[in-house]
Image (tube, rainbow, N blue to C red; front, side, top):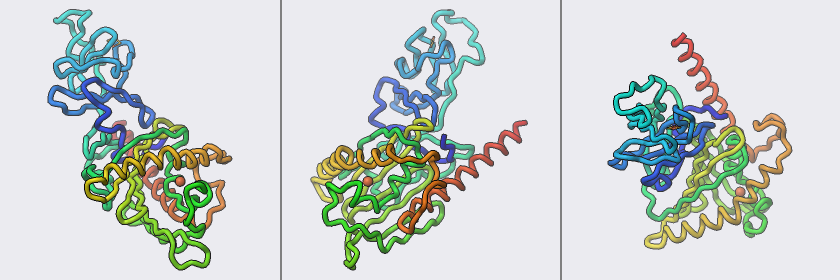
Length: 319
Ligand code: FES
Ligand SMILES: [Fe+2]
């Protein structure tokens, strides 16, 4: 399970309406719900009474009510009513649900994971912050996060894995300039025919904990946020934007439909057909064109180490 500190995208805002909704992210079941003012809250989804998923419940006067016996919790996670015990009943101290730190921005629900929480949202510089001229969809891959990131940072598979859609895209990735600065991997280069000097210019950037931005053309970009469901599966949200007045959103919708329906299944299939016992790069024989994947692997490994040492120092402080 990935324990990298940071803001993880865990849902789309539009997924959470008046009814609570539970999702599994980072190996945990989390209930998302809105109070009377529409403010989003997130808690551990397991009802402390007898364990029913609180996503099955409802919101009553700004409190989250469990579907089974009607116990109610306020926005801090405290149990404020146990109808079966009467209004004067003493609430056991364990009868509470742990809150999660979340914020809702850019049409997405972000959950903080880690001891500190002052980091900015990992939003790519080139991606507009509004979602006009954009369209968003989600998908789930039965592939662990590290391998999903590997797939997202891979450009040179295009003329082969997507042979049906890649006419005109040459097989050689050259130049391919990759650098890591301030926790961001940036890569830019050209897919071209062996003897051509020009080709398809591509640029990408990847930010912790699992954000990728792909620039296919100056007017077409894709934002991808990858979050583990558990150690084996990954939830992925993809937003395309097409910088064209009036019909940008429509074009983005069409481009995204094409990408997710016709193109991405090939990417997932390549991962599912990968015969590696480990999910890291240790069994691979890497080449120059894999440089962005290698840079990400290093960055993520450092972030994982930082998270592990922060956890061990905070448990040492508690001891
Ligand atoms: S299981 Fe939730 S109220 Fe009983
Ligand atoms: Fe692909």
